[in-house]
Length: 108
Image 1: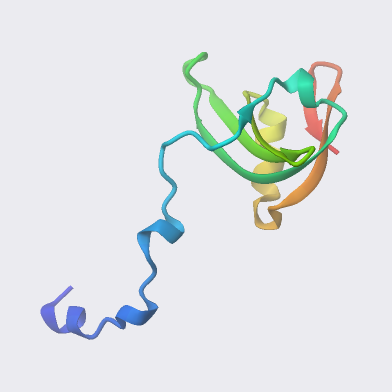
Image 2 (image 1 turned 45 degrees about the horizontal axis):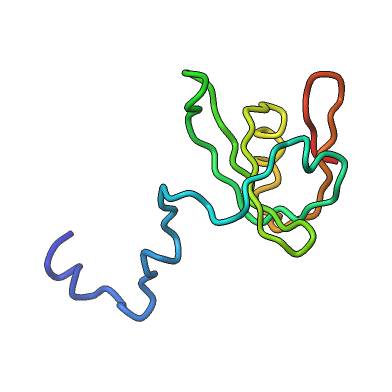
């Protein structure tokens, strides 16, 4: 950018970093295990996908949700849940139930 370009920036319409930035800090919430929330309705409020600390070369999905008026988080390597939540990201928050079908988890 040139100095003239910079001077023409409308500072009132310039977004704040805190509005769009996603830091690497853990999401707030009580940690739950997948078995604790299976077949129970939750309200998904946010998610993050990062590299797994347990299995190199795979992804880890962190889901933040409300359950029984408590903010909680759960971690999973489920590729089905990762695909589903990526396709639903424009609809967050949403209500869902995580079910286990054979050997994989799915939103329903």
